Length: 76
Image: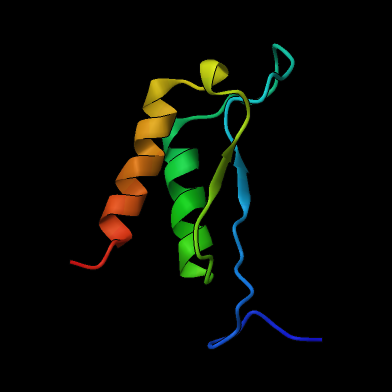
């Protein structure tokens, strides 16, 4: 079976759940959570990320944190 290593046409695009509805006492997504998840995905070799959930339910601060991580990791 072919892997996703260098030279492989296979790409890995993990989904990162943002602002999934949870119970009142459950942890809510914070910008730092999103930032660290995006950084970890790219540092782990991902070719991109999919920000999962309905856009209208995502908090703008969490989306901004994903953008910040991508911009910081982009080659200059």
